[in-house]
Image 1 (cartoon, rainbow, N blue to C red):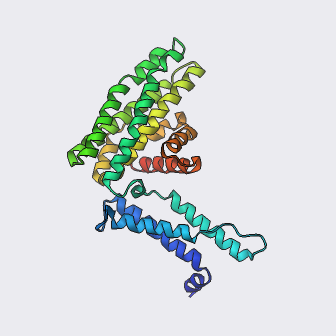
Image 2: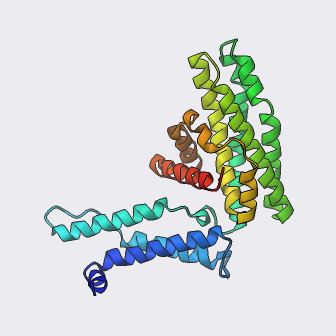
Image 3: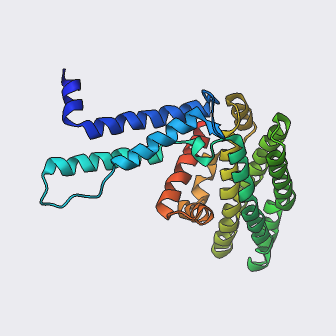
Length: 279
């Protein structure tokens, strides 16, 4: 009976808990490719998740004045906590209600990728003479790999076939491994200033490629994701010492025009998902 008493005494918190559960279930179903049918241009699962998220927003309210009862303030705090949990739950369907939406998001990242690779190309002249050969060898092939990834992303957006998706899966993993190897090589640069500069420009590419990898994985089957992760010898956990969370969040925040705190949470959650998937 205590369960029903808690529901009666704390209805807002209970409703928020149910909505978070719906959001969680929708995210899991979406990851598994379960749609439960179409809803306009999206799916029933994405619609349920979106509605639940919206209702969570309606439940939230501004902090109450100190003159109000402590119980009311506690309820507001609990609702805020529920909403924060919901924001941090991995929800691939938030990137787009369909594979086409995710494909467009991938293509939208390609100009930033091209720019980041161009910055890598222009960095050699800024390094100490003894360090330039290491950096050049580490980043060799970035131009070709990025051009191929951009072309395949656009090809998949234009014709989202299984074959085009498979090519995109293979190329994003290949490029991600190249970037990972480059980070490990750049870490061997002796001059501190050169090393810092080299790692920063390579990380910009790494952040974008890892973001595209997460997007590709979100529209891939579980078996395909397992195949992708099995092809990775350099794991994200190996690269952590050479990555700046703040730099990655700044890149994501600038791209989506969103607050840095939200971008930081997204980057952390995406990385956690990729590591859990075996990347």
